[in-house]
Length: 322
Image (cartoon, rainbow, N blue to C red; front, side, top):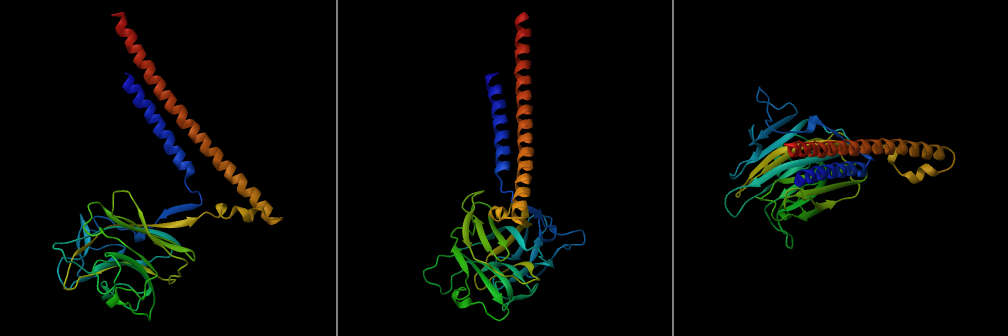
């Protein structure tokens, strides 16, 4: 009986902690899913087509498992591109992927694209060179770049005229990057997360060391993407090869709530003073609603625990009579 009571109390404590975490979440950012740029199994509809993505080159799709951009065979190139441009000004893209194959030597790598060009096979990780926009590369084969540990993750901005420095693994093009030893054939689910705020920053995080543990790869300063940019993925193999699989893609619009921007500016005289008052009133209303929700959770938990204890005592008394 004591164990059951203790379990109930622990449940109540856990519920309270979840509510506290929700209260402490950043209220200035709202997340809105973008279905048009999200992808998951079974990938294809009844007509063996994807509603929101095109694919080509050597890409093959196993509907219940993955989109394989290249197989573990030499000289392959494959791509997957959204049919619609990504129009959100602030966004987050989370990709689950897997790079694996046989043997100790492998290559070449894969890329994530936000570019004006789309659906074209080429020499930069399976997609076109002289691109306009953003490329994030997961390079698994080292050519000529001393002092850098591979696999290596890096970002490049293209302006339609600059070529990718393939001979030196993008050294001349790199905005930012990081080594990611262990990301290939990792024992845990491998993911990459891109978070972009217009005219502010691009942040790239990786998951490959342990489940649920994100490691920051890099964060840049302001980057300007093309007004029309398509989300894409590509990969290539040369003499060496690997399987490059996309397992899922989750894309969200990151909406900045204007009510929570720079509170300091809301304390300026005249008009600013009115904004500050409105801002504080809104925060008080939201704080009050959270307190009321938190109170209801506590009351509900107390009622459940009390009812259980009372029922247990009643059963004990009934047994004592007999």
